[in-house]
Amino acid sequence: MKTGKELKPGTVLRIDNDPWLVQKAEFTKSGRNSAIMKTKLKNLLTGYKTETVYGADDKLDDVILDRKEATLSFISGDTYTFMDTTDYSMYELNAEDIEAVLPFIEEGMEDICEAVFFEGRLVSVELPTTIVRQVDYTEGSARGDTSGKVMKPAKLKNGTELSVADFIEIGDLIEIDTREGGSYKGRAKK
Amino acid sequence: MKATWDIFCTVVDNYGDIGVTWRLARQLVDEHEIAVRLWVDDLNAFVPMCPGADAAALQQWQQGVDVRQWPAEWVPIEPADVVIGAFACQLPAHYVEAMRARAKPPLWLNLEYLSAEHWVEGCHGLPSPQANGLRKVFFFPGFTEKTGGLLREATLLARRQAFEQSAEARQAFLQRLGVYPEVQARLISLFAYENTQLGNWLDALAAGSQPTHLLVPQGRILADVGSWLGQARLEVGDVRVRGALTVQILPFVSQDDYDRLLWSCDFNAVRGEDSFVRAQWAGRPMLWHIYVQDENAHWEKLEAFLEHYRHGLSADASAALVALWRAWNMDRDVGQAWQAAQQHWPELQQHARDWAARQATRPDLAMALVQFYRNWL
Image (cartoon, rainbow over all chains, first blue to last red; front, side):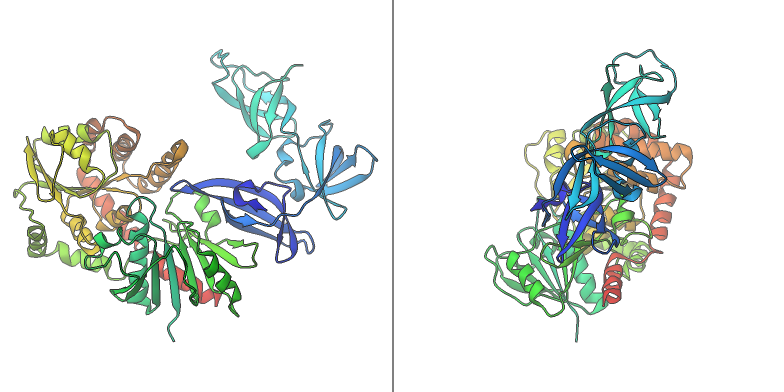
């Protein structure tokens, strides 16, 4: 059993006996301290996709999934090929299947990901909680702030934009927390 | 045969939940000829807004609505055609099981809180397939066409207009409440949660050049009013004068009388959800005290509404309005913000009327629910 607030990309729910993959999950406070989770689901048998909403406390049947370590092998158009690190099997996913982590997927990344399998089929990939990426572009420090509290926009190699500390420069490596959409965590050691 | 609807309401800590569901139930009965059962877990909160109701009755008919005590120990009953769980309340497990056992399960709606935030449009009307095979649908009230709209009875604005055009009706209503304002006095109603800024505002009203008659229905703000007046306890009917300000304590009135109170005043301070919506329909300048949430999540809701509401105001009037609302909700100097808002009073008055008129062009919440049910059939 999972509750609505525990849903995250990669979770597979059993609804009307069909397996549904959570492709995207957005948590929102609704009112009087109740909350809802908006999700994008994909039926793993038919490929049909739908949007749903769950209350934070709704109880849902989840499917126990197989998980293996995998790395990104290469990207070809909208197809992302991952390799099982133990037996070197290759698995393909399209961009939609990994929509939630897509902003932090880039060619050459060496992160050990968690590949999620349903009945032997790769259905999703989860990134480590902390990843390191290089800043491709950001404006120079405007205020010379070194506290890390003043933020400014920055762009990664794959075009993803996020807020970073004001002292971060082009070429710096930064740590990113991949949970809840991804956010700057700090400067990484080179 | 009439469609049957069950509305479930848990009273959390105020009158908002029961206020909205009672209003919705009445409107469904009055305007859509629907048989409505309203299940309430605490009828003590219901009685003040429906004088004559019995807080101990297991079942009672009030204005055409079958009002039921929601018992701790659920007694099996045939589910209705449409089931509304208001504000994410959890339905009795046995009732949900009975819904599942029906040949055609009912339409199950989760009626959510009112918010002007953008994400509401993307969640309104979305299904929520449950583990037990039932499908719940999330239904969001709101201020745009992509939401479920606001509660508004078909005759509301006509009744308001008739009341406004009759000085006698206004006078008779106020006299019934024991209110006899000075001829030149500005009338303000105050319904709010506890607010540390109240004193600043009352100081400004007391020091003002125009006499103000402040009407305070019983509620959570009363202790702060008493504190400002230097009185430990205030009773219904108490009238106190400080400078240009007269403060009068009113009883908690029925929903219909509360509308008349809003229509009688020049400015309305309201709170939560139900009185907030009614103040908008009153078409007068208003001040919203929003329900406080963890991590100040309510500030985003406040800003989201202001973003809609301020549209069409001049830059200066807009800034004054926003400053006043933020001051009231974010513990800033309300007295100063109040003075600034006075500079734009005619514009704020016209804007309030325009806002009500614009919102009234959209289908109301009860109609939207009924239409949703028809489409679902």
